[in-house]
Length: 639
Image 1 (cartoon, helix red, strand yellow):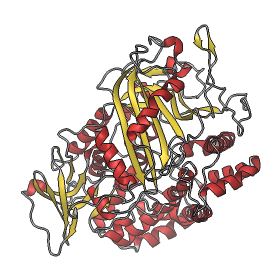
Image 2 (cartoon, rainbow, N blue to C red):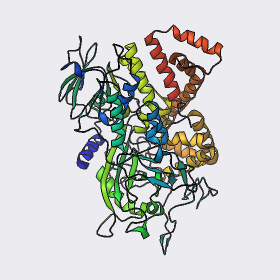
Image 3 (cartoon, one colour):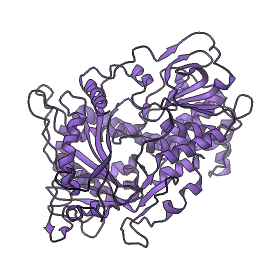
Image 4 (tube, rainbow, N blue to C red):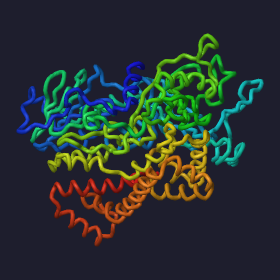
């Protein structure tokens, strides 16, 4: 599997861009669609790709009760090429807010979040009543682990103080949300340390197989016609005037609408983006391994968090940028490595650890295998554990984790074909700073499922209408400069591209996280969950300029004036979208939803009179505009 992934990553670095399918995956044909293999293979919606697609399908099935063509339930199907519909073996780390989104749309029930999910105080200090972590080894339970908080820290070097009992707090500074803010060289400059603990972010370990089976149960229970078809590969889509014929390994089926949830490697996406080079790539390697916790044979050498194994690392560095792959004629550029790690719920000695980096697709970038070769010695420095069994016992890798996630500036991906909608990672709705888009899917699930039901009601299934479900979102576009600032491209005399100082990324993150922490949770929390808002971003930038003015020219030089100019445009649009939502959008959504309005009767009446005169298609289009303003400004996020 690693060799296959490396081969695909090597092909992407060749400069040829995304490979197109050998034959067009989506074909647009004239005339009415032919019949499927039988009435039980005719659906309103077919979702291709079941791991995340089943959540969309379940939400659609719940919202589509009574919305079918005959007044019955929508008929929804999930098509999955794997022999079983199940997630990966290790836990998904999610936030309570994301799980509550699934409850709100009916995919999960509130009782699924009772007990362990709500059993700990989440004050981020580790000193309230209760333990730092609670685990539930029952494989039938949704929540496997709940720990109090995660750590973010940006350190130019890992310093250890070895004492009689091993590492006596070495390598772990005082969090900046405590009384001490300056740590060995200053919180925002030099080779100092900065760390903070944050509660409520990715501090729940969720069993994917349980979550998926719960969503499947909701889907199949919402209507007799809903189905999950496993061991069924989609070989192509034929789009006709009145529907889509799906050519699968098990025969033909039809749908009024197809939702592509097959990830960034979806053949439909590769057909649309054929030849495009990604604007950024997140490369990830790691392990789910035993050998951590207080019972470890290597306990005297483990770092404090690895020894306790009761907190997570959201994003953490313990060295500056490396030039290991920035030498020779095929230099790939410097790169900054980051860590992410979480305790597992199955056992106190299990820990999932990721090493990731942001790159472009230059030919000299390291392979996944090379990143793994970096991972092992760096893991020892980071967590104090020796992975080589010939040197020390205890560490046992249960699973190796590796992937690369190409991302594109032109995201989310609008619909290129009638009756075909991209969703999840296939649409690029996730932040370019994240790897994997379940959190983004959960955030947008209510919006997307509601929009799909409305599209079916209004027969707004052409590509122009469907593109309104994946609209331009300036806050998502603005995150590109953040990814660009953490990516060092190869030096180029013609373009003037130069390698930044080794501490560039750490200094940038130390400054901004220190500021966001001072500004409070209303600024910090949305950003940590990939939601950028105009006010919070503006305040952070103003203070960054005031606190470290000499660093600003370095940032501009590194990012490049064209990228800065593009970003300024997106930032301005965030401000405009904020204004449009507050003055128009929220009224449009209230008036077209039928829900009670919080506006004065005179004002709400005017909006309701306006909404009453809209055709079904106009109502659909106005709601998509209003949602774009709300989500594109990050105003859907509430603390």
